[in-house]
Length: 341
Ligand SMILES: *Cc1c(COP(=O)(O)O)cnc(C)c1O
Image (cartoon, rainbow, N blue to C red; front, side, top):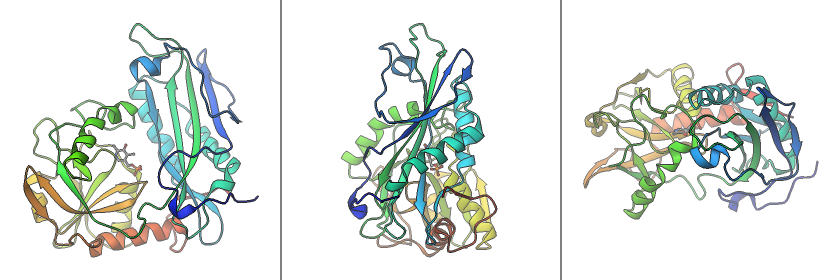
């Protein structure tokens, strides 16, 4: 297989069409066999359920090349089961978990030429998603669905070095109690767009959302979970039923406990205690951990001792250990690395 020649360091994060995508259709109560196809465009009725009432869920993951030359993905079984949870909450049919993983493997294999080489920092981003496709005008779940997986190569997240970010406490809410904050649905992102555009206009990189019921507890950002380090080196992450359960965050908590021997806590995190933490990071597939240097709450600044120049020491260790596991320098827990070829 001949690799595509792309400027891997500089491709950024935008859609680049690759050769094949996986499609399976749900009709008359069952999924068809699914297939890889060439056409990147979707033709659907003007009244398709997804277009009218936003019945769509998605996942995000990466394929990359390890040091020994294998193409792998990280814990795709967890993406599969999270998509089951997302689909159920939006009254969509479940795409079977083993078929999800198989579809991801097939799509990555078919686009292996676009998997960036080891050491480039670039990856092949994988986007599985599902949506209601038949006409729906009275409000109800669609009867027909399409599940798809496409891939697009993306550049290194920290181009030109890691730079801690500044975030602001948002005046908007991300998720309601008993709402959809815990599932990966496009609708959660649609309503976050105004909040992130506003944050950027005010000079901030991201929003910190508080729990919408009391506005006293830390939830997450628009697309990443929080992880804090206490001054006595414990790892703390907010517990809430309205946070999206990040696979990166769950993996980092495991690494903290089992590889680094740190104490870990998943619990309510009050905004009032944020000023007492030593380090803060945002966890997600895109960056693994992005360090936060400063939180601004309506003009009041909280500056973490780790500063604005580099990752704090514990977050750096977590980052190095998890990326070491992903790249194959450090032995992975059973089942974390799915070898594609
Ligand atoms: C996808 C997502 C994350 C990160 O999850 P990972 O599985 O680590 O990529 C965090 N928060 C939200 C709201 C998300 O949609």
